[in-house]
Length: 333
Image 1 (cartoon, helix red, strand yellow):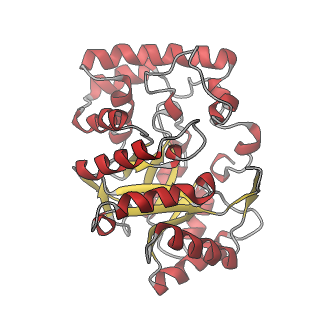
Image 2 (cartoon, one colour; image 1 turned 120 degrees about the horizontal axis):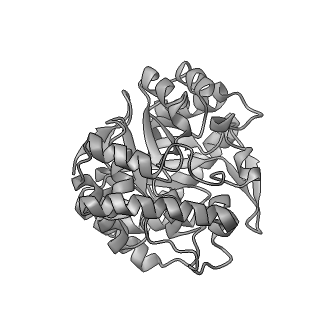
């Protein structure tokens, strides 16, 4: 397994990380046994970055990771756990914004450490900017936890260039977690250049656009009511039709390379720079194996040009979240 650094100040981690959200929430029915087996397969393959959020299934995702690591004695010291915090939930599963107050930072962290069964989190980040709290205060509170040894590195999530600068002026920032794929290239305008100027790495989520770029999605695929893709603009109506046409164009390029659509899409993200670590959201061992196969895909200039022709920048139909969720993205302002 090749490694990449999370920015100038962050840890060295596997070139592909495992995003664990879908193992517990938002993508329909879950299977804890298969999820744990997938985490173990990732560890066996050399994956050393596990990403979660304390609000994924109300903390159950953290408990899942705890159980997976406990079943492999010594594995906690071999992985970096990245945790997002700040989302406010209610008993009905609703969302109530984000809380970045220093007292809330310390509260969220205490619960995460308990659920994960660990004495530290490797990378800690607020999931979305709290517009009511200066980023300096939120980052400053995490920096205090770094000094106390309960956090190793400070990350950010879905913030824009100005917020990046303010945060980096407060404390060292290892990486920015943000959506980046052939379908979502908005960070290239100002966010990515700013991160590189500041020595901040990128952990890219949504590299398969929540399965849309996997090559496995079809218009008649059945999803249950708990799958948030039912409400995603890119999976709706004419937008889905247009996006699947793009996927088929990418499939022709991928087949010419002898790889799958998913491997081509992940390889494209890997090709964007050594400072970018794609997160794959595999929930099953076969999907994990397919995703990790992207590490063996070498893209030359002709390949990249063909992929750009198949999926031009800005070609994806529909926004990456619904209107309510988009409003929380500092990175889109």
